[in-house]
Image (tube, rainbow, N blue to C red):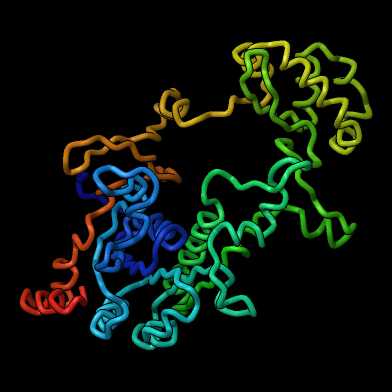
Length: 400
């Protein structure tokens, strides 16, 4: 625990009703900057993320990051008494975050109409696969489906192979970020512009689609369908991944006009540096194969260390592809305190990424790591007026 200090979202109360990635990641970001986040979990095992990927003594290491700074309260949302507790919490909340399939919250009497009637200032962030309206709204939609429908999967990979996925659940995370943007925008409107509360409808596929750069206008104007291009950045030359003599991978982004010229001079090709046909990106695109071969041959003739040294001195953006071991050993990560070590209750050390973005005056902070299931039941329920006897009765009936 840190010394008491002001946080930018201090005083904002968030109720998290969701599991796994999109909703919980959205609420996590709010919690990292000081919002009080009360996470509602099922008494029967809690959020399934508690058991995902690598476990330590039965608990996911991912959990300690995803649920940091949150208070865990167990409620069986199928039971009327649990639904009433949520209504009481929502009545005093600023934001509710949920990522159930559309209609689930309404079935429990916890939909937007019900909760906003109790609290007109409430902001409700609703994350789902396909949004709250439309013909696909009732379909189950995980991040992988959103990445596919949003267009990301189609352009990821090599042209002679099936589309591949990014190695993390990027669709869920993109949706979560849009949820945070929506929540903070609605909060500002409510607090500064005298507006009422509102709900924020985030569809995973739309959040992904929002990141698809110029794919749509290119299709609309030219009928162009962007295809997979491997490790290169399509239509922007040169920007690719190359293999060094010692079998390492290096990413080089020399696609700016001035940087391209510097790079060609640096690797001994002043003829290309001074070729007027290559002075702009459109000219380079027309000769992509030639340029890629020149760079690829030069990289292949040198070890990674020399490639990076030469390009750094020439101020050409480049870098090796980091695995997690590289990240942990890297001096720049260390200098910016991007890896922090915390202690579990049994004394075991666990590394977690530091909080981003970095605010100069009111930075976020990990005040505590992911809580035990139901760790904050007594604290939260007592604040709502439930006595110890009433809490015991709720537990005996399986409500909490």
